[in-house]
Amino acid sequence: MSPMLAKLSKDARTPTMATHRSRVLGKVGLWSLLVLAGALGLVVTLATQVQDGLQAPTVADACQGEDAAGAGQAVFLIDLQKPLAPGHATLPGRLLNEVTIGLAARTELTVYALANYAEAPRMLLGRLCKPYGNGDLAVGTAKDQDAATRDCDDLPAQIPSSVRDSAKRFCQQRDALAGRIDALAAQARNASVDNSYLVEALEDTARDLEQVVGPKSLYVFSDMMQHADWFSHLDTPWNDWDFERFAGVRDARALAGAAPPPSEDLHATIFYLARKDVTEHPRQRLVHRQFWEAYMGPAKTEFVDQAPVLQYAGVPLMDVPTEAELVAQERERVRYERAELARMRADLERSQRDLDAGRERLADDQQRWRERESELRRDRERLREQETALASERERLAALATSSVAAEEPPRAPINTGGS
Image (tube, rainbow, N blue to C red; front, side, top):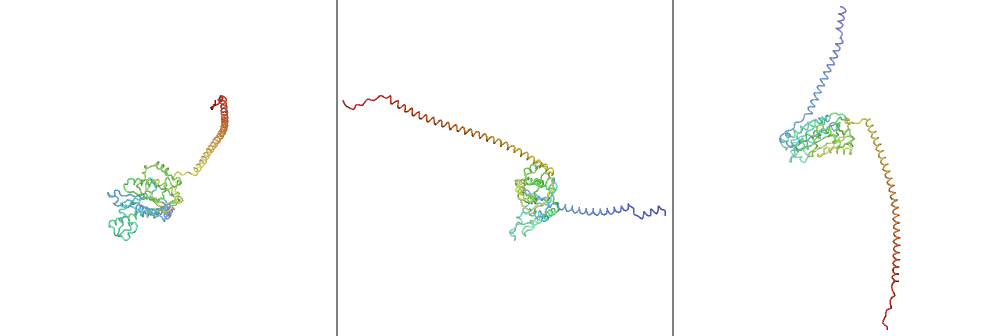
């Protein structure tokens, strides 16, 4: 065998570098396909869950037909941008039941969660229509008629079948919506909050309710801490939560036009959560509630305290000054205070000089008044002496006049009394 044929035979028996590379790439490609298939399955599963989570329950005809004119409208806005403790993750779903029990017949309830976008601050979770009134479930012949207001999961046997069917259907839809809310609330969240577009969501809700003719209600589950780049309760000290200044900033931005103010026929219930080390303290909580009462204006607003105390930090969104800027601001403040102190000291010294000059003028005037008073006393004494001298002179002249008259009278003749 020639050397060339021997080399070719050896190369045929020994794997080349290209063959080795192709085998490696084949293994990598196989693993990639497996991982991609698993990821694709996960994406499909998550997409299905998201679709199921966002699919709104069917709104019954009672809230859509012509007979629904003037029916009530209610909105439940849930703020889940802040992390809830696992023990409180089911609280928003339980509050949904409480809200629906208080609704009147043919009231449509729309449930939103806060979203991550200022331009679209709300995420629709579902809609419900309560086709019955609480009185429809109250039957006088029921054995437990002394119980509290009935819910759709506690129906007496005596109610008509149509009411029973609609109540059961409503209960099923509500339970499904509560499950979606619970699943959303149970999702793990960072302890640092990126945003909370609460004002934007309330403005969108106000625009929706502006067209409502019948009764309208608003329910909010939140710690009511707005967190946006144009205004943030997290980035602003609590003693600067001034509503007038906030209103000026809000009106200046007005990206989507000025939102209609809450009307006096709106009933608002705020399921209020405290934030640790801030609104859990009475003074800060009072200032915070006064801010939102001013925001709600003439609407009838009720705060209902909830058990959770939220503990989280906020990612700074407003123009928060750097440390160098804070130092520069502090220096400027000290310089201004020193200049102001110097000005006040100069004003005080000038006032002191004016006061001393005034005191000297007053002392001079008092001395002149005392001298003038002495002169007046001397003048009065001279007048009294002159009056005394005049009186003596009058008496002397009177006596002199009397003696002169007596000397000038002739002697009188004796009177004859009858003799010869």
